[in-house]
Length: 323
Image (cartoon, rainbow, N blue to C red; front, side, top):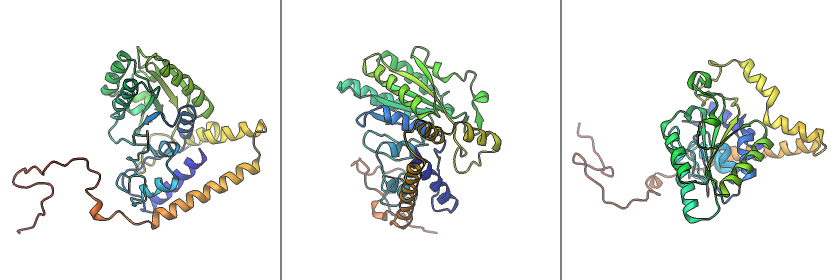
């Protein structure tokens, strides 16, 4: 969780220096969701999420260096500098998806493949409260329940869909009940141990052939929706500060471990120093690595059809100005 926090704070800094550009949605505040889910599933299980994906990219096994280089668009990035913030991938991790809610039916498709192959694997399909009113999500719930797909649907409810509070956006904010015919549980998404135990329960439910299950993780993001959103026009600074002081996921776990003599203050200091160094080295690499060359632009496109002429030209034509 601390690595994700430091990584996101460094991304914030590089964005403000205009070294990272374009869309960038930070995950600080929500780290317990990613860490807790990953602690309860296997690396052979599958996971797909929306565009706030840096944390899950890290927990799925991608290095900080590759994530930072992807954010700056360098060829050493996890998607070779072509994906950016919203499009990072790893084995059994299907991104980073930019279309609101679209990853949920894709996740159900992955779960269908798991059931079809009979490999005892599951898929975690995540979406936010802002996507929870999408029609495609309800269609997916229906199909997943009919086919008893091994899919954990996870609503990361961080209280705001872009700049709109859940109370203004949803007639019912009980997102864990939205599955109707799918059992649902509400979880404290700021407590990594709660998330881990709830996910273990949900994973066992799916693996035992009972079909899908829905989890609502009640969490909070400290930054705005994206880097273009200051995050204080629709909520107060005091609200953010209150959440930070009362239920920060890293602070809560740290205090719990200290009070139970599971770690010392010095150990935490050493850990944080090592993490800061790792993130700083990753940032230096992300700024010094080369950008992908122009000849790589059309690589990794899995189509071999001849170009289709439309209005006398095609996408590979070299166009010349005749003015």
